[in-house]
Length: 94
Image (cartoon, rainbow, N blue to C red; front, side):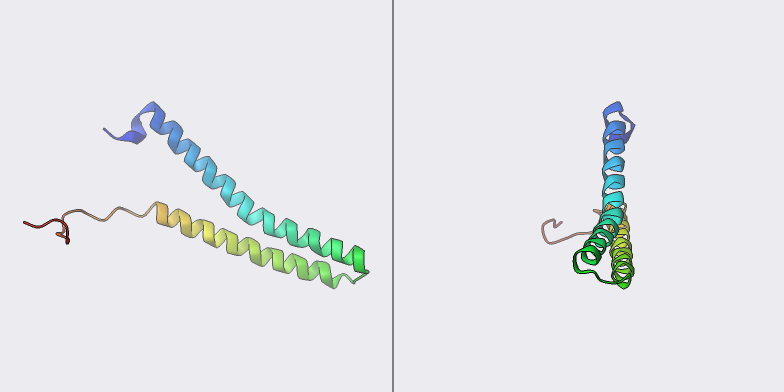
């Protein structure tokens, strides 16, 4: 019997999807917010120009895209099909 078709299996699949969505949101939003907040703090603390905020936003966007790429790569690894067990390996001989 397929585990995904049972009532509990549906909740487990939903929980996994919600965890992945939360991870995706945090890995995209957190770098952007932290870099921009850090840039604003640096500007106010050391009386720097607007260039610091632009640099912080650029680094934050780079971090957000890197997090997005890593999340999609992890999702691709989870959805990859399992290798078939038809081949003979070291531990199973005829």
